[in-house]
Length: 156
Image 1 (tube, rainbow, N blue to C red):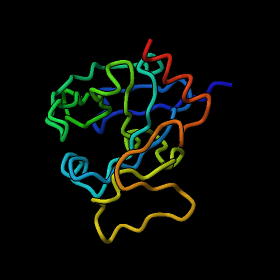
Image 2: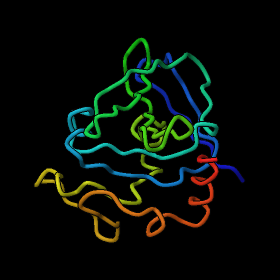
Image 3: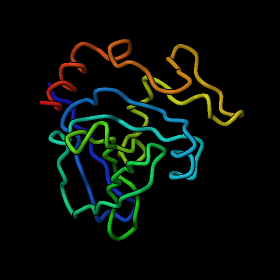
Image 4: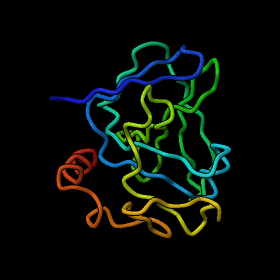
């Protein structure tokens, strides 16, 4: 059975559906995510772009600077400008980092791992039992075998 989750922007002009589970869900505590979201961290569900269907409206891509110097493409609603997902240079356009907060049921996708915790805000308490790393990690050490296969398929 395929799990489908829907989401969208604040004004409702853009709606989308994730066709299947994400490969992984990151809570990113880097200072760039803090600045871009205006919050303590960003929660991103990593999924193949081919598994994301826009149901109505058309998000627009906004190139945004990043720590790598290569930028990221953030897909936003053209009306209310809410960030729906990003494409990062290392993952490429075939992988979307869905902003979990834009899902109709964001509580259904808690983080699988907390990343860049070296720059997390001191008052943020990390949950017990969820992996946390100071920067990034080796996918082979964290991802499931199925997720690794799916990731490899996006590379080919």
